[in-house]
Length: 104
Ligand SMILES: [Ca+2]
Ligand SMILES: [Ca+2]
Image (cartoon, rainbow, N blue to C red; front, side, top):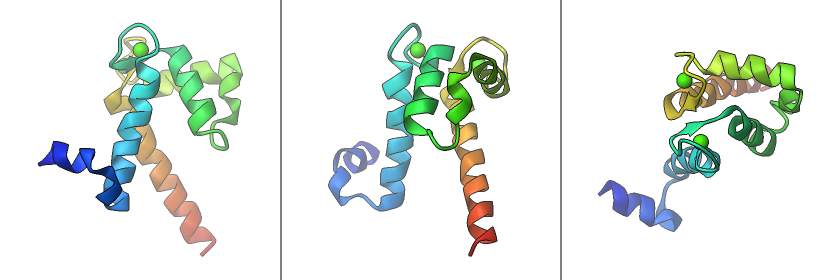
């Protein structure tokens, strides 16, 4: 059922499609080097710059990237996993909503 929904992307609701995109983007970067299921600092940097440009412009600054990475790596094991990433995406959704309400 779930796989069928994911495979028939063109008939998907925009919310389901967005959820699949969130996961697909994570793997696009997590599979570049080392552990395929986690983001290294380099992989995170590329994801932030390419996919979140306007929000994380400062990710190309090594000191700023260190801070972002440490904040996301809640269990301090040197990698950002899907769970850490989803918490980041959720926080950004909340921020967007706040901004949206402010300027509505
Ligand atoms: Ca990786
Ligand atoms: Ca971690």
